[in-house]
Image (cartoon, rainbow, N blue to C red):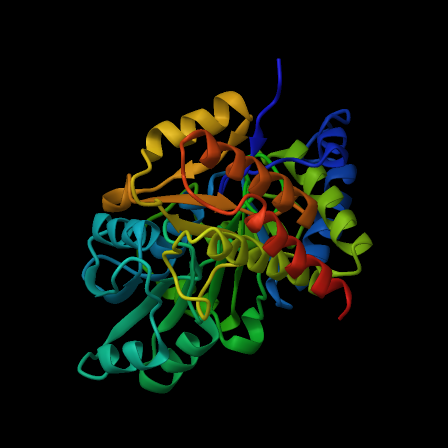
Length: 385
């Protein structure tokens, strides 16, 4: 049986080396071996976040870490702003509302980014805002919000914390948490971090810790003060995902061997441009503008006359290429091409070639090989730089 070529925005393919690392003999999470693993690995992750703060590891999916960020910084009745440009921004709204927060929702049309000016205009009439929540990379639309600029807007026009969901891009996009002024940055293991689901990572600024220390919301499993206390000892308060942390160490090896994290970011940028130019060459529209396009996932509009559901099923059955459909009201109108983590320009060329084969099967009119050539031109051009 053939294995599918997974080009989803998560979960993503796992490097064999990472799989082997996770297959090592398990040991106690209260042992000296674990303390060494935890301390060394979290230190190596800091450049990926762009921070000198401790990296906290939660045995959870990314959503739990997002809820931890909400519950530890705000209490019922507090006023917060949530920037939403798609499905996962709406998740942040739901989490905040579940915790009884008064949510001011800055909502943009799906496929558009939130600009600094948008946020400044939204914040001006508001006061007593406890936190501003935003999604760095919106998985549902392939938008990369300009979070460095959004952080500046928050700083200049409020006293709020700035809390960012980086689940679908940290590990593949630039991140300068300290330099940009992000107070909490969250990601998950199953995206650009090249791991299976089940581990979330977050970092907290000194400013945010002061708020957390005085916050009155009762939390237990997601108590970040407890995670900070145990992290100082090289451990976690609850049973951690030891095997995933072994895998995370191997991920750090791979990033360092690539030439360091900036090289990893460059690779993702090249793959983004390969996908976008290949679709343009096939006269297939993209959901987002080039200016705010994600380096980890591209949202592609359904070509006119194409039965998208049948096309995606056909690609998976005949060519073993597994692309993702859309979320929310974009279902049927858009599909998503994931290009993050353990993915390389050669993988993009393979996927575009198979997409072309599928389009031919469905009678879509285009110049055969045009998409592959466009992607290849981007790749070869990148090698000359």
